[in-house]
Length: 391
Image (cartoon, rainbow, N blue to C red; front, top):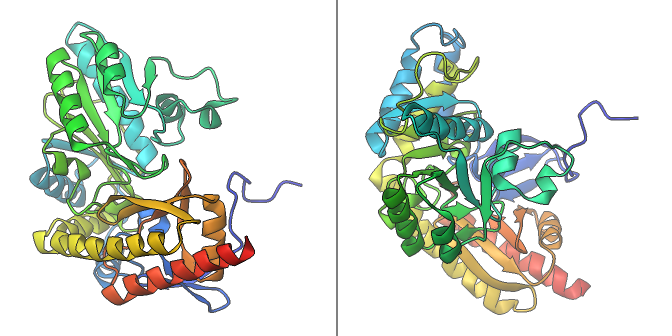
């Protein structure tokens, strides 16, 4: 008999009833150090007082009115996002998958309105852009698309990081290039700065739009507000979600005025997207994370954590191969199954997230303390020791 909750997840046998900063407390009272942050969502930790205040204040006013009307909280969030980024405009969504759908529509509509329609979008192997039909077609992996055809056409998948393949594929008929600056689900694989600059150059030469998926790498996760800033490039369209709501369902598509020019009245919409409750929380998150002093702290903590992780790898060369990533978006490349590392972490009361390419993701709250970072390394060491003993 099928359970009441559709069984599409392979869930761990853990349930939590409250959180405090970088910690989750299970229903049996056990405390777990959270290095997953709900997969890069709880950027400011659990039960953050500033977010509780923003949420409860707005909850006492109005939750939802629909986009038939002006929504001041939505405009405030959009103003903050455009003030701190390359973008001229923003569309507020509820999730990352929704941002993928709009980014695809926006890019294709741009070319349609120019009178020279282009529909081919170049993407990279190992990508993850969401679970909707458009998003899985963009990623193209067999695991995600099998059984769900016919898929949305118009995507061409290139080997990850293969700039020669990109040069051969891109042309004056290419609609857009779509990629994550750092692949999350793909195994914390950063696109080198030089390659990001080359991709921007190739887009400029052919007129193709550059779509960056910063759903996981954005909102301070790498030590800059958005990861592409490290390379000094500017996208035409950007997808944002996860950390922007600090745990509240929220996303956004940011774009230049030119790239968004085709999205006029009636071309897109959302019932819940941009509701006052979500936007009040999102605006507070942006205010906190965009502060240069906050981002400087992320970079300081990231250097401290990475140092500890490098020592961990050196101490367990039979378990770990190396550390990769940027800021507090880090991955442990494993010599054993990532699922085994995650499971050993449960026994050590530390939470991590498995990814592809034999990698375990470490995505702690950006507010994690130095003490908790040291404790994280200690518990990961305990997990590695238990795997060694079991072997």
